[in-house]
Image (cartoon, rainbow, N blue to C red; front, side):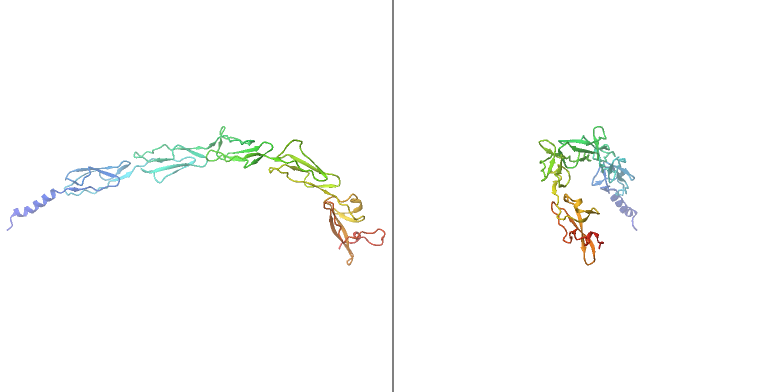
Length: 345
């Protein structure tokens, strides 16, 4: 028979072994710290979980006691980031962000024509507040435009006191005798400055040459400048080829060089010709010769078909070629018909 004392003795040993158990290091929770933190804890010893700065506790237990079992109870405590308030809408700009939670940052930018008056970024702090005041987007302004030498403003209307706003435009013109190099218009940019201004350059022209058999008139002064004008003409029996009036151009030369072209003396004494669509007597209409550029059409015979056709002749600077098919009608041979009297082929 087994003694009752022997039965109780193993149970006592188990109790003693259980009683000396310790708790291990507690579970590490994200963004939390344990105080005190040790490798082992005595039964009944307490620990406290604290969320790190910028985080706050949600659910679970903050304070735990090492139990007789030596096993820490399951802790559902969560440390979640603090959330900063909604940053709002940046008028005339944009707010860029991924999250308003600690420790994220947001950035600010403005639309073209506006600039940031304030910070470019702000960070959500440990206290759940933004590190910087939210900026504003202010209008970009440009100072009065710089006027180039020998130029003046032709159109300029500031829209903000003496200043201009983004995309405002100013126009320049050069004073007389000066030529503009570059764009006459400048624009207020999104950076608060103007686009590149033009340059005004003085331009002179040489005195125009007198054409042969003609004359030229121009201003009576020592130097001729940009946009000065000259007029040309020709003596009798000569025709001006080119414009009567020319102008000193921005390139320092004249817009044209007219010349005088000679008239043509006709070797034909009698003929009926077409001129400007009408039949005229050559000896009457052009008794003093054809002027340069004039065109007449002579009548020629087609003997086989007994009809007529026309061939043109033009006076070119004193020279005119009579069509070979034309035969001058002899008034003594009155029985012969003139080509101009025949029907058209």
